[in-house]
Length: 398
Image 1: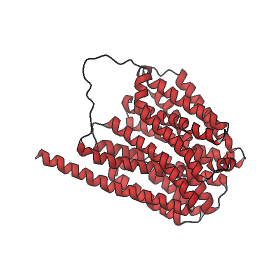
Image 2: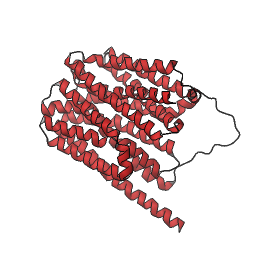
Image 3: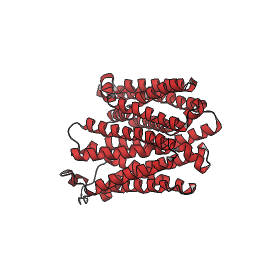
Image 4: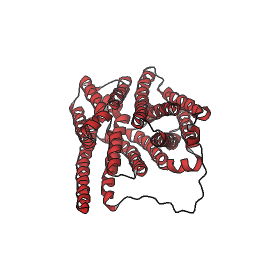
């Protein structure tokens, strides 16, 4: 099982790279194709529509072809898409390839997360944290590599780097034995039974809480991916940074996010999930506001680094909190919230690209700060809804 976890970590490293490679080279790629930010936002949106499809398809594909074959299909799709990106095909083809890339890393993320949650018995939280840390390392390494490639005038080589990593990982999944875990990953034909399967459902009283939680995840992932994809462009316009230096700001953001993930779980356990989410969201909104009013490159880097630190645990702790408040529906709740994040990641970069085209970079940051403020209001609503449910349960028990 330990071998499976480490190969899962390698896979998460690759999908972390795939998540941010587009944003890291967006500026020179737009110059190459003669595009505006809205066009770049459409490309990013297409990727995340594919991501959404991959997340939603994961449970059906694992039942149909097995977990290992599903991971192979996912990594193979990602490898093929990144190889096609490497050719710098006409823009219409690039838009068509984008959903395939998104489908690959979305499917990989969903299937591997479910495998770890379902089959790792000891130190499950540690295993999940390890996966997320490697995702962050991939998202950290790719902008740094892209900055070097941009500085050398060969930015287009960023896509072959991801292609090679994804291809190597696919070969490992194809050839490596995981011992006893092989049986867990293999396809198993469903057993015929005359019994009617009972599928748990959400109670009517739980639906408002679920809906608010979905809205929170839509806004959070949308905001995070807008920052990940447009931060270099924003910093270039706001501070006059060179392209290579602007691209490296993503490394700062993700580097502090990786560090934050090392202790965010313990901090959330100590403070409580809701308090952790509320403080992180409030401080994150404040840091974005500070970034919007700061014209200095050096001070802006401080706000960017602190933002990565503050937002580092929000996604994982949010999943834990919502599953805690909606017990007995872990698989479905997690799937819906991850899919909601994919929807936000698809739509928000498109909106952010439109803002950059029609308004200033400063106005765009203010828009993202406003989104974070709305997230804080949603948390207040979630807290009120959980208290209402608690009173109803207490009233029925007396």
